[in-house]
Image (cartoon, rainbow, N blue to C red; front, top):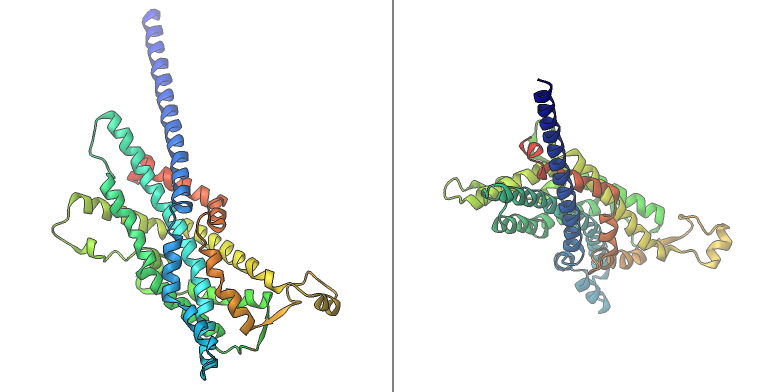
Length: 351
């Protein structure tokens, strides 16, 4: 009896050790795959980024260069052109910050969801060769949804931001002088108007849905989803991925990460502009301080060319220091890890 009990105990201990070893190996494999996936995310966003495409779309829809060319010819309606240039210049740089942050965070979410599915597919193939959850053609169709942000989503965002800029800056004279602190306050007012805007036509149990999600992904009533018949397995898998992504974008964690990125983006925009608000020796003698952000004020007419050129800094071609800064944020890394964990663990995915 003692011998049999000992054998049984040894067998159980061995089973526990093997199970622990298997769990450790699976965790190590998932961790390795996650880190590899993050490098892929970074390379996709930085090296193969869509920022040049985004910048081209912005400069096409908000073409301030045509207005500056008109001003060189000293037209009779010069004041009217300056007013248009004021609105377009601020709108373009503000939309550049919004759309760049959205592009980076959305791609991060999509690539980690795909990464989680690829990990599960690899694990399943090793076991029994089941049908993959996200075959390459589904991945391609799913990732192509980013075009919404570069197309209809961007157009809708431009419209909302332009209205906010018109409301805040429309009545301010071109001769009116603003300090950097006053400019920062104006940008905060514009952000409040844009980010508190809600889509009342798509309200749910928790209230109206933030329009920031609407700019990044099309509504569920997209043509692909409304085809009741004739859907292929690939279409069904893609719709599932899109709906899961949409749920992720509407989560509080995503809102927090995006808000943190936007704060960093607008802070960087102001830092870039601060170079032009440096006090002269005469200003220092008059104010007795060189550190005060309110010690230097510029007429709005002089601020317009400065803000107009910021799109080239925010949407600069690779390597983009702004994008790198966003990717290195701890909140971004933690959120990416949480998304990957949710989609690479079968138990979490079922939930």
